[in-house]
Image (cartoon, rainbow, N blue to C red; front, side, top):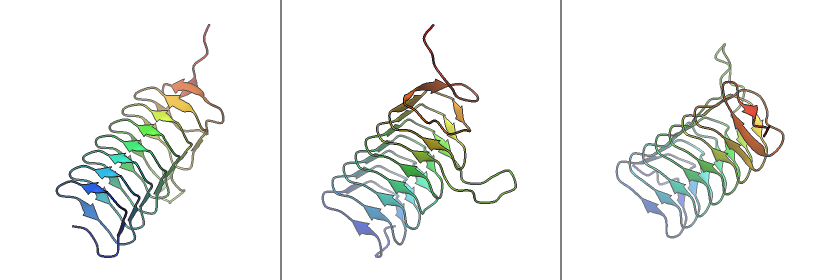
Length: 158
């Protein structure tokens, strides 16, 4: 189902069984695979790859050249910078423990977020950050580098 109020750029490929709601914008040359759900006011840049079973809660912004891999969940208010790569099953949220909307994570440009990483509500990640698989990011990451663990901490060579 594609809303007549969605804006679809040139050369966009959309797979089977997708839901694209009102106010969604998809930039040129973006590929959207099967079973993708893009809720109201999701903005996706140009030259992106959105893998199967990705879903957004709406009101989020995905930059240019971004890859969202299989089964990733992008919460309301999340922003992902240009040329970032989000591995399979990454989860973001925008609610605190009381169920109040705090705002989604802000991921910088040129980041690599590892498989099954969880990005907590309201955090910011600087440009050029890599997170290891299964990391839990619950605080701002203010400088480029490699971070992993629960909670995620910066890797320092010894």
